[in-house]
Image 1 (cartoon, rainbow, N blue to C red):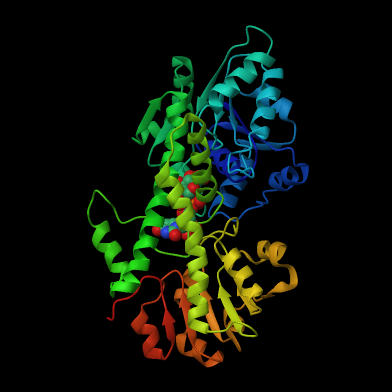
Image 2 (tube, rainbow, N blue to C red):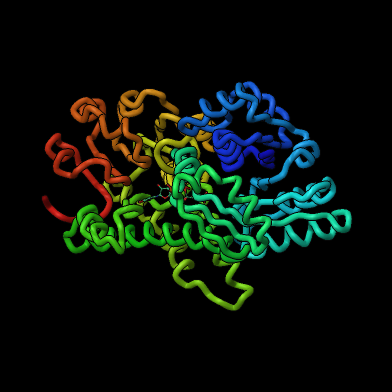
Length: 437
Ligand code: UGA
């Protein structure tokens, strides 16, 4: 099939590469010409496992082409995926200006029957809006269907999530649209991946419902962690014990400094805003948003409590990415925590295997950047672990201790066990680890 993806951001790029891998002829469009030139040379602007290889091989086999010519992309395609950004506005609601602009452009260039697929995370009702924009702006009688096909990709494992998903959600009431989408994902149907066929609005809400639920799980375990510290319980064991119940499941019960990234913070707030005009109040999601904010503040308090006065102290921060295996620092809990450390007049030395370039755009010369972990630790009064990178788990703790002024380790991802650290002579603070082993 001829498929066009509009928007070569994170989702668009993975979708384009994944669909080309399924054997389709994919045109990926972006208005950023510099990005397009780089992509055509096989250079990927983001770090995502396996993406570079798959883009290169599909470019070489002529199944994938990048272009800034949106018009051409639209005209050539049987199916057009809209994968442009929907950034949050001040009130938390999603900014749909890019989606609307693309819908108008599609309308202007609509010739044969096309299926237009909303891949971007968009508020409930956006599918209908795209439908209306295209109808209003297209030559009368033009034939098309709009489909909602939300993505469930996790950064770091996005390609694997695309090629081997848990499910495919297709929102459309058109039989023709449904048939075309089945052909798009024929490979996955053969692989026995479950498909959920429903209407536009239900598909749109499945996306928000899933993200907000996962965010709730995290906020919930983070809240329990606070209680664990007060009652001499260990949250990692509480989570393990809870997770073994198949109705609960073990995933997304890892405590931390609060969820971050470009999705959960944005989508939980957007869901609250989607509900507001309907008169329904999503009090649980509202509480999750508030709990996540307070988690970041509490984690700073934890550092302060362990270190004492921060003024003039040198603090090593290990990890800035919002989670491991990505260079993404959008809404990373590390950012407000580092900012608070700086406000408290601490000297901050930072390390991250992938995110230092991005971090520099935020912190400029306010912090010291180190590629080498041990160099980051030299002469520090405390070390704070903010991202669960594997390389941090493998640190030579005796060496770490010898490099620091005072061996204080605040492990906001619980990558170590308290006893292991205390044996080496660290003052160790984890999250929710009240129990004495
Ligand atoms: C999330 C969802 O997991 C994807 O299914 C979804 O497609 C994506 O958002 C999206 O809407 O595009 P992602 O933002 O890549 O994916 O990251 P997650 O792995 O879900 O982690 C989100 C945040 O929660 C991170 O800050 C992570 O550290 C935190 N987290 C995750 C925890 O604190 N504890 C956990 O147990 C799991």
